Image 1 (cartoon, each protein chain N blue to C red):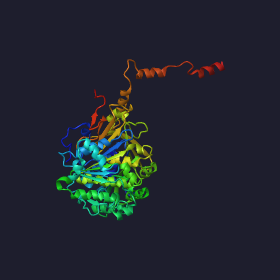
Image 2: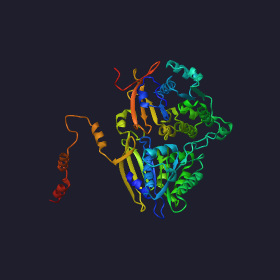
Image 3: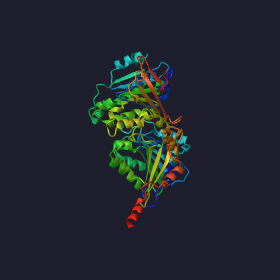
Image 4: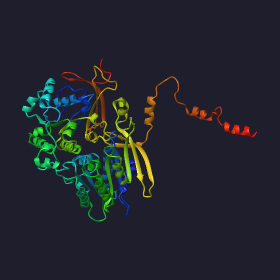
Length: 313
Length: 252
């Protein structure tokens, strides 16, 4: 499913259609959303560099990490960054988002542009488009956009203005695809829903094991927590053009240098089996015993037919 | 690069690892205070074998409080202050006025950040990359900011930028139970998302005990180069001059 997402972003927008948009959402019980975002970012970057994607450039709006973090990250992933200024531009909304550092010099780079007022969403939008057109020109060539934290954007600006920015980007002729990260437990349901409505794909990272009300675990469940901590469920909903929705689920595992997606395993079954006490007798039925049980006719079962026969006799 | 300062390591130090460039969020509750974690990390940062400079922002206690406690742990804060290794920002009397007034009057959290950044930039070169900023505590900062969660988060964000730009460490204490009845505990959740290392102090599930004062859970999200998402849980007992850490059931 993660591959399907990356392919959809790679293939981009059809003529006359809005760009595909992906919401990646997580919560504190499974805080791997950023890892998934980074994975998608590196996949799209590789596709752009290899010339396999519709987009020829990428504008990354960085609220959560510095530009140098992303440059180092892409380097570690084997993405060639020597020519990075030709295909990626990072709008740095991390280092000085509110202008508190006036008087102090910020690190400069040929791939990063600084934003000192993230509250001005109109300016943000025009800067993103400007940076994208700086990479691909003003013709028919497209670029992609990525925002590493819509949750952080919403802290500084209204939901409606942020939604407006995303909607405008999606409908721009030169935007090929767009994706963003959202921490769902930081917002009211209606806010999360508003961003999901703008998306053609919603990828949720959820915990493998739900504890109590599914929000925060406690240390009484530490053994289960420890076993399943770096894993989660990766639940994806695709919205098709004809209105149909396709839903799929994978297991996501965060490992040392990467994020891996696999089909849902029976590990949960193993964990549940581990909780069953080990006793001398069987607590569960075998397959044959289940079939035999289903075939047993109990007293007074199917008596309706017999009674009807008695009445008519 | 800050390390353990040559002192014998314990379970907490092993779980936390090197702090340079990391944000450590410490959470506790009324039942189980984690102030000892702050004191331990402070003592570790000011170890004689470590070049670290500590900038301590206090909304909770005056300097004399920490001086007294650290003396029992074998660290002389007054001497460290005189040696320009320990800088204390007394924010006990600070009160938030108005955002615009803050900028024009030059006080408040914006100005505090400016002071912190200026202090770091004025340090000798060899010490600029070995700075630890400590905040005690974030919930009182929010009270002093008259409930302006966004202002507090902005301040934490700016301190966080120093961890990536200059390799500083940031340690902040907050009280989890203050937000437990809140439907959406934004401040503490934001801190947890931002933190590279999360240390939670909780009571034992079995209640009070004479020899065990609580349990610590340390989630270390890794620095992107080593192992990722390491989770440790162990018990602790706070004594007069130190704290003992041990795995459950390992004490005879």
